Image (cartoon, rainbow over all chains, first blue to last red):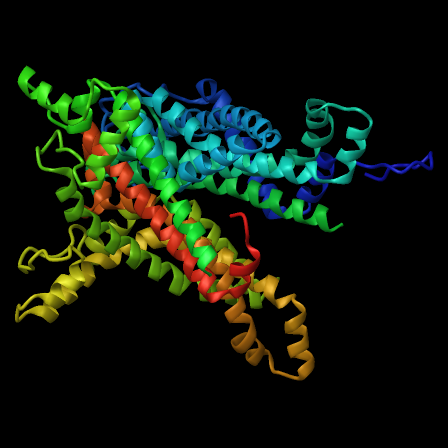
Length: 297
Length: 342
């Protein structure tokens, strides 16, 4: 939309708006973003939208193949599983478990990680060295293994896996925030506001955060794709969501025994996981690209 | 180089020390008696408990307890498994080589395929090849590994019947357990069917290794692509062009070497990711490795095994990490001299 320029005033968009302008340019990325929003809405509204409940058994419709199959039934669009539960409804409910909860997990660990990271960027000396080494150690442990250990401490179950994944993701956020804050602190504009008499926390909240938020959001998309995969993997291994819950990983392991008779019970949840991870990764990729562009311009 | 080596060894020591601290404190965090968790002897009689608490200095303060725990670890005593009552150190020695074999094969596959493809993508930047490769790479690291493993079994083992779906080698072949790495054991064995056994073992490892290799391979494509694109923009490439070298000459003589160094730097970081994938894949392919053992010990609430497995696996990953750092430094003199304060 063309805007009339009445005043001879130059507009300087904030870093986030600038990012959005660059982000919009790529069509594939916008498709990914659209899918991300779609999944997000699905995660919120799935209880209203689904045709059946996720645990409703239709005992006279066991293992109905998807509707495009010859034996399919159009009232069960994506078929049913071994207990006659509608796959489409379960997949939609699963969106709020696997995708929605991964979103919540990422938000929580982002908040905690950013707070710890920015505090640790302000510390120096032995404390910071110790934290650095400790972070290196935690980051060298594979995320799933760490999650498994935390689940072993807390006990299995969906709630515990979520806490485990929160704890696993925090170090990455600490790391990225710490480096970003340190980098910004050495710049001149921070020195300027320091000379104006601003305290460390004022500098952090007014000068630094607006400039590093895009890096944190980018890390959040990476973390979310990891979180989706981890929730699903733990569900699949039977350490996360219990089988009756329509969590995609747990659904997949539920269909495992019927893999050869009813392959749709395995490939549909897998496709759902793949779709959500690809959508998240596309958003992250677009973010990275837009960041690079706005840095170059 | 000496200072670099000392720094790395120092880092390794501190890390392993911290890891032992983590696994030591896990004993107190896990449900149950810390002493039982540490030693793995379930339902001990009061007499046994007394001996154990003497062994682990359980009544002393935490520092002395930790010190005795460390001594136990350096003697190679990791306690006994709560589930099988076998010493954990011997179980780990039996199982770790299979995981090393699987992850190393996967790493080699991922590097041999991923890096050249990444270079091709970088050379044809902003063309259709580049886009296709990037799309495939994106799919590659987005696929959930357990799903991929199941699909691979369905297609290659059941429908096409090309490759076996489970285990390390067919039970027909009697291979003595020497190193635990199947290929070396086969070479060492005196069997007359050595060649057949070798073929059988390679057909068993191919499918799981490819499944594990896909996601790291896709990341290598991206790393190699970025590295190559950075190198192609440098001034020495421009100088080579000005000298009149042909494009292929520039790529072979100058660009590949310099881009490769940057990729090798990231191999260590990818290794932790690869081990995670290998753990899940081991469960599905029934591979007798440490990942499957660890996940089974969670089902059995075998806390001794979990903390020991965590310790061993993470130290292994960190050692690989440090080793790649060394290889990188050996290949790239710039890293040795300027990179201080790591």
